[in-house]
Image 1 (spheres, rainbow, N blue to C red):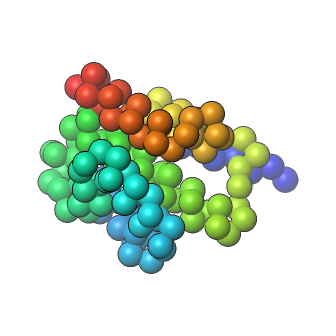
Image 2: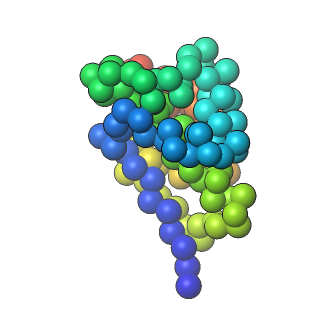
Length: 120
């Protein structure tokens, strides 16, 4: 049997997304921390504590969804759950490219920050 991952696009965001995995899994926290360091912005706080209107802003929603998706993938990797194929809906295509190794994590995070800024 083959496994596929389908990564979400903008519109999937909600306040509190990822908090459960952030609290429980160190590998998830590391992804949020790395993104926060790269962007100079607390991504965990954005995802968990912001107002819905703030999270819905394109420049925030895109990075929040990307980081949360990557945190989930990191947990799955540590448990030897990997996709044979992956794809994504709009923004999710970038997550798929990072997961597949076509984009480095840092490169993808910086690219999505710029994408969200220009789409705004």
